Length: 252
Image (tube, rainbow, N blue to C red; front, side, top):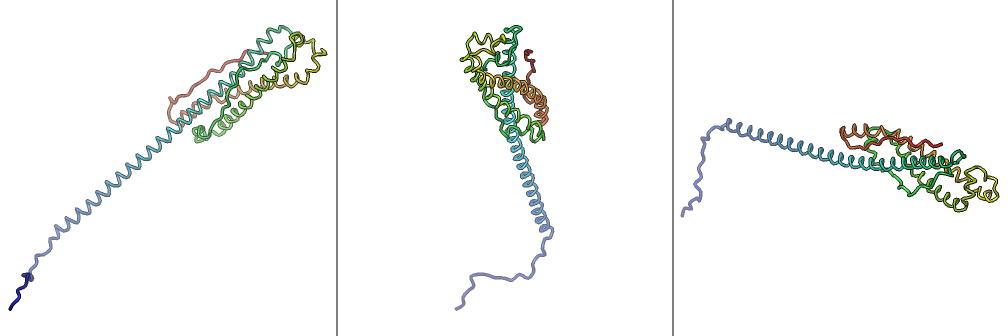
């Protein structure tokens, strides 16, 4: 019994020569496709990186602009408070001096307590980014110093008002008239009040001079704000409020 093979196997000894042209074309096409694909991937990656970088820069600019605008608002509060102290004091002293006529008048006699108390102004580090990156370190130092002096002056003015009101409660109108006229310093009822009057006299002169100095320093800092901010953000129309410097009433 003969078993037949399930496969009809034949050996071919006459193979055709390889088609090198087709092989080379196919390989070249594959390489070119890989190069093109890599180039496209590179361009997409570079575009994505550029977009991410632009997004980061845009977010940083928005953050810096918001911080700078907060600084501008605080600057307005600071200037308004300083100018309010200075002008109100000088107006009060001028009016009191005119009412006294030719009689010698000391500051504490006519400098009335301030009504209301402004808030302290505190500047955060991130709000100074435009100035620190612009290397305006002298400006930053002077601005922070101005805020510190203003915040201290608030309590000096408040202490003066409280002490003066307490003193005036102990002085009768008759004695006050004699004080203004310069004839009551030897009065028996006034001598016990001298320990209260002397500190108030010194404090009145101090807060008046400090208010003048604060206002003068604020005016000096004002011109440095706008050009630094506009240059840093490359925006000549970056919003910034200006203020017109006034002149306080001339009081002796």
